[in-house]
Image (cartoon, rainbow, N blue to C red; front, side):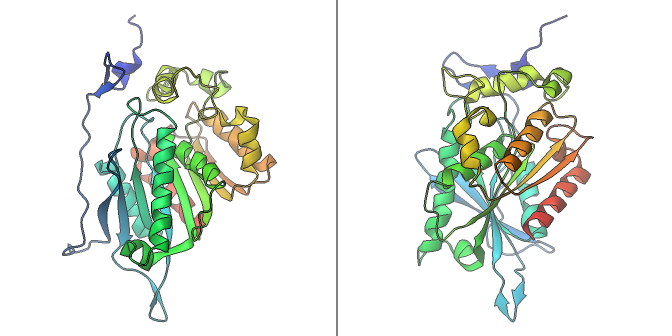
Length: 320
């Protein structure tokens, strides 16, 4: 029996210089722009450069019909979105990410800022957290600038900013929420964090990791490789970027977090860690809404439209 190769599983080639070649190219879609609307078009989108030196950008979404009260435009919540991909793949312009953000913007309704952060191993943590803070500060600066971005200035309710991420994006969301506690983000208020199947870890295996070690989609060697490629060189999975719950200072800081929604599925090797995260948050006094389903696997919302809709409905309830 041939030895399992996580690089092969992920369709990656390891290069001598420490980079990787990604063999799968996912279908990309451009933003719609603000020109003529197509019949039935519910959301418009545009790309905004974040930091040209880092090649980072954001794709911003807004509904075409903005609700109004007494003929005044209703201000919408803002979602900062961090995509999945195990730190190493995907892009906000991938068709599945783009369509998911279209749905989110229309259904909530909300302004969505999807952050195209740098990928590992070419950029290791905390580079992704830096990119997320850059994006949050960009929004803050638009809010304060008389000539700021019109979509942000005209339509956003700055008291309702939500950090939302899936998998490694959920890891980025919670680390960004913790970082933002140490900065004056006014006029923004982080009203909550939405963590869908957060990618967190540790050296000591949990029961669910051992039970699902040979999971078809997300086996342990693949999870380990993702951390190996993303964590700072010379560190291991007990580093606070990976093992939040092993760091006393991180746990102490959680006391100051706003509301959190945590979602997970029983067939995810990380389910025990996600439930432990909820437990620790509750013990720290965080107002947590936990939505766990026994049936399902890591990344199920990318494959199963019914689960994607269920997650969207949980989010809608959480922010309403």
